Amino acid sequence: MTTMTSSSLIAVAATFLALINATANAQNATGRFEKEIAAFEATDRVMPSPPGGIVFTGASGIRMWKTLAEDFPGMPVINRGFGGSFTSDLIAYADRILIPLKPRVIALQPGSNDLANGKTPEQVLADFDAFVKKVCTSLPNVKIVYLGINPSPKRWDIRDAQQRTNQLIEDHCKAGKNLAFVDLWSSSIGPDGQPISDFFISDQLHPSRKAYLVRAPIIRPFLQPF
Image (cartoon, rainbow, N blue to C red; front, side, top):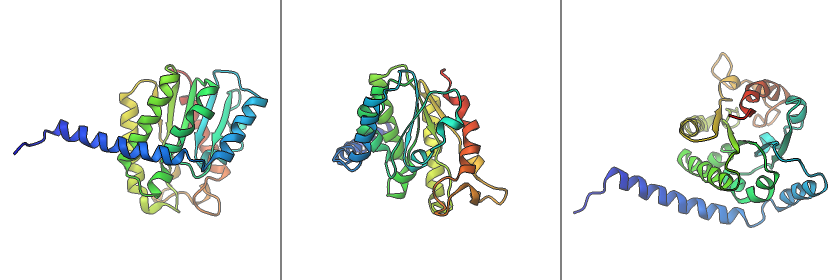
């Protein structure tokens, strides 16, 4: 009987994850966000952004950051967040709303929706790696900044998976090229060890203005080129 080596097991696992991710990407390309994506494309046709900007993307936490330009004064920030999105959605639409902008930095915060809908931290990591590879094929010099998953009262029950995902992606960024990880967890936890309640709007999931004001100076240094 043949015994598989650890390296063989890792290769099999990686192949399995790749198949899962390919299926997810195909499903996400069916038009679930077509209205939002088409609106971004229309904006870019009417008011094209000069190359070298800083693009923020992700789910509702980014989409709802309406004061992005105010919170990052003097920086050419562009918001390309669309609510309810998964990491695989960012892969599916990168060549329509991210890559054409030719940014020098892409700051993304996906992952929480993925976990809440049953993905494992390892699958989120695999999706993030696929995103990096797709973007860097077209933009080899872009800096990709992963904004770590933050805790929230609404999803406190999946905090272990969120922290595991953060650790996997932080380690991946440290080992990669032109990658950076921003810890947003620590600043969202109060002295009682719980998420700070007024960092969230009434749904206890999405960030409040206070949360954005705290996050901006933490993120800002990471938006500079390497």
